[in-house]
Length: 63
Image 1 (cartoon, helix red, strand yellow):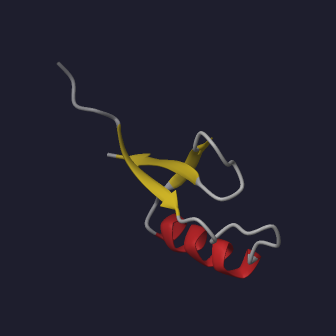
Image 2 (cartoon, rainbow, N blue to C red; image 1 turned 135 degrees about the vertical axis):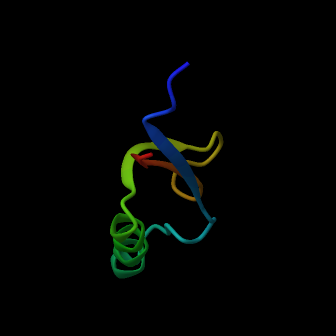
Image 3 (tube, rainbow, N blue to C red; image 1 turned 30 degrees about the vertical axis):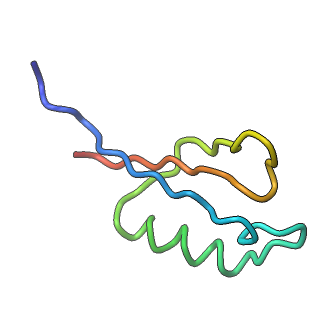
């Protein structure tokens, strides 16, 4: 079997991090940090119940 071509990481955004008025600077800072490490956002997934307060972000990068 061949080795995986990508590795994945998950970021669970805490309740309150994305408020009704999100802090775009804090979100951009976290996304830039992950991007600098080679991670690429591939899927934002809402957490059942309340889309605005909880979200899971899935990232991948070449392995």
